Picture 1: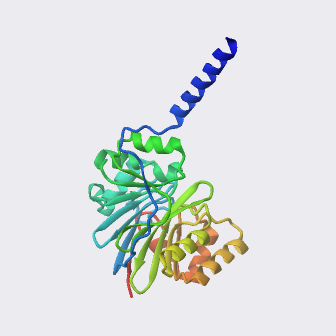
Picture 2 (picture 1 turned 60 degrees about the vertical axis):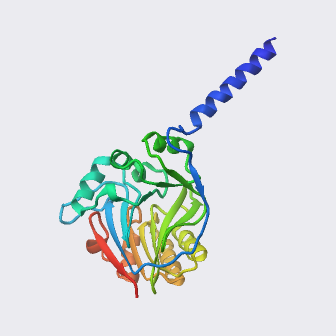
Picture 3 (picture 1 turned 45 degrees about the horizontal axis):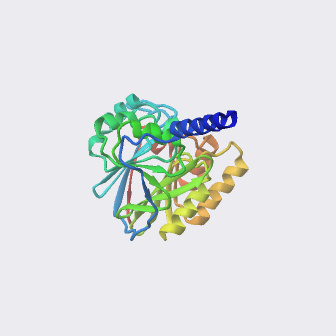
Length: 284
């Protein structure tokens, strides 16, 4: 009898744990994507740094430790990551003239709080917008995102084209699991947008180029590099070897990375390496 009671208790505990770990299904079922369709290319892409920890020299936008990048190209409007705080996100998009209600999609690179915190603001404005997350994201964070009320949360497994010339680069493990965004600029190559590059920026760029069949042209975002000059120099050399011509290291990239990017790629911190900065890439 005692064995039967003990067995029943074990089953109840297992069910309880599973219930706690499984994301709420208030929104529609998570979709799995793993398709690379015909990629295409765009003639130009506008990129604005919405949230970053490097201050705006003109004091227009609020800085915070985190990252959010706005990408617009040929009718496609994507917010890549959302920073740590809804109010900071709302303030900065207003300054930059970005209408969150008109976003085509939100792409989340990885689950760290300084990249997902602003999702609350987006849920209040437009809960029907597709939210693309790495399939390997923790169940806890998936449940939190679903509970915000979004009706379409899409788990991305492999590299997936989401619009002509625009693709999500499938997840790599850092930890945590992390994905990137790539825009194919006509006659130039891929503009790769990254969150923190926990799996390694070279690994991400190589994967993007290999799976999308295009040369990498530019990299913007957090590179997560150490302060070792020799290590950073090696990474920058590898990016050059791959064909990268533009590197904009922000967020967690580090001062050494910014200095070397300035010397090797013409990076200008005061012009393009801080919150509220923007750049327009044009095809060749």
